[in-house]
Amino acid sequence: MAQRRRCLGIRTVLQERQSDPVANRWVFRATVFKSSHSKGFVGYGDADPSNVSPLVRGAEMRVAETRAVNRALRKAYGIGLCSVEELGWASEPARSAASPSNSNGTHGSNGSNGSNGSPSRLRDKLCLLIRQYNLDPTLVKEYAAHFCGTETIKDASRELVESFISHLSSSAKEDLVGLICKLNSFSRAVEEVKQ
View 1 (tube, rainbow, N blue to C red):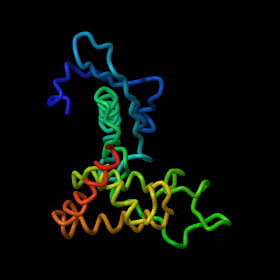
View 2 (cartoon, helix red, strand yellow; view 1 turned 90 degrees about the horizontal axis):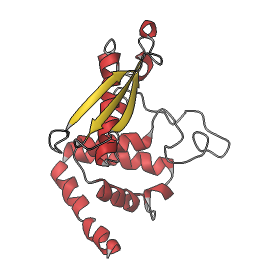
View 3 (cartoon, helix red, strand yellow; view 1 turned 180 degrees about the vertical axis):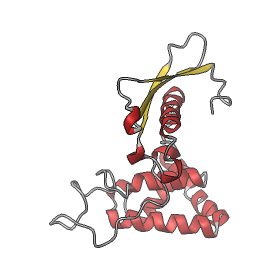
């Protein structure tokens, strides 16, 4: 991305005070310079064995630096999606239907569709699918609302959003071209709303 956008430079600095080499916890600060006149866009990244994939254990320092650079680049170029490195890993176990719930039958503290910090993090899973298959996020949101039968995806229950994510994932794996055609059918609705 930096090369495509003609980024002037990126500087990374290890944050020694916040890092703990014994615990393999690393914190980096990255600054992205878009031009020679830029003051820079700063992003921080951290990594330790508890928040990296088992596949990269032992490389926490590099992961922390990569996360810092990704955050600084996203700030510099106004990119609203998080990076794949920040989403967790595919082998993360999904929350089962028998997991603890509140007295009102919803999971977590606020009953929203994944913004409560639960392990399944629905929003992150959806972002990962969008990035993995290079889907249009606006069209995916429209499709999700249609699929869930709600005005917006935010109005949908956690169970409906989980069902949509599962449907989107299987559709992308089985027939990506068909899924893209389906998403494109929502582009007219999005354009009509904008006018």
